[in-house]
Image 1 (cartoon, rainbow, N blue to C red):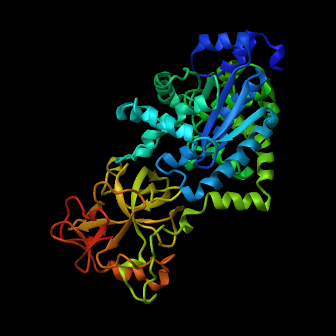
Image 2 (image 1 turned 90 degrees about the horizontal axis):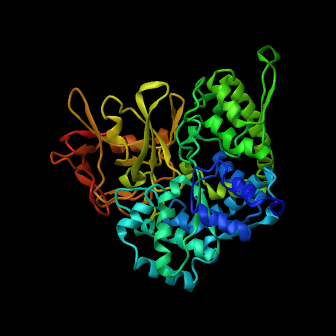
Image 3 (image 1 turned 60 degrees about the vertical axis):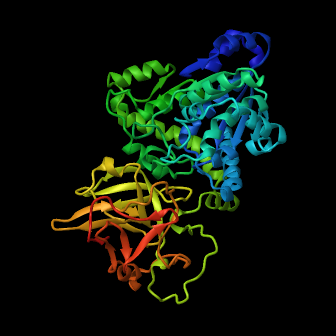
Length: 527
């Protein structure tokens, strides 16, 4: 199709619905001479969700415009980004991504034979690439590398060196994939401008950068793998799609941060050049829109009702998801999905040289799987005013959901991004309808009660083992059986000392970096 289009028509297809283009003049010049070579990369981290249809739809535009398109499965980047994909799961995650991205492209009618698929580790471990990483490190400052990754690389209190390498590798990919342009979300802008600045000193050309807007999720914020309510998974059942769309933010007349409208604009409209609103005859019957602007205006004027908009998106979305569900319903694909993304509540902690407790019935602290956690987000429980629902990183592929009765004692902003101590092998239990997969430990003291979370030593990382002095080598139970009350028996001797240290029978709770403590409380208990 690309050969039949004019340069202007190709330019329109390539740039439609983009938020920004860096290098427009160069793009037009290339299109006058030949087809554009462009790549899109995705780090193989959390499970892809429906927001991935946004870049897929744009890839369809690139192919219609005659572009040569490469898709990069950035497996090494997934590991470098604060180990979002653990090394032992890297190959499985990459296989999952390859299968699911190809299934998405097929579901929207993109011919796979016109695409080139590449893994980062196919070339990023070569002698030439490694030498260029060293060359790049000699011309890039720590400040510039950190700034470049600020919107993309997971930001932590004590960042790893790997996160600073991430933007440089993404810049080098443009040269090693031999492309004219890189396509991504506008959240990648700092990495793109970083690439434009740092490639020329190495003797490599500055590339064109094409940026999609960030499409809001169902809650009105960015759609995220780690926010369950903000996204619809590609393998969600029809009833789950209906349930999540029903809860989606879609205020009558409000077109700002409206994830339902945005999905129509960036995915459904470009695919078919029209969208049908399905509604009862008494409300005017079905209406086909061939111009998105008209649909948005009629929604803003409250001619189109949010309920009809959601129902129509539900029907269209399920048509896209059905072939993906079908592909992943085979035993082979089910096994791949469960292996690449194991259930965090069943995951065993990684320990070096584990030693079984000498007596499995002996009540000792090493039977409790205590870990450092980091609170990634905190929300009020939807059905209980006294409870928070937190997402806590405990060093596993996905954060755990933890329900804590801390609303009256600890302000939300004090919990956000805080390091805490978490019990990770208690049996998950529902608390007012939300399953809590771990327990956050707090110091408590006085009447009326004062409560504050325990503090790991500065510099601790999520997932690090917390132990009691003298009980470092025992292996935790897979799950503490509620009937045996192991934790309750041990907890009776948990205490906060007069110098604010967390202890069991006078022995300190510790990590490899030092003692667990609390900020202000003394001579209290731990619960």
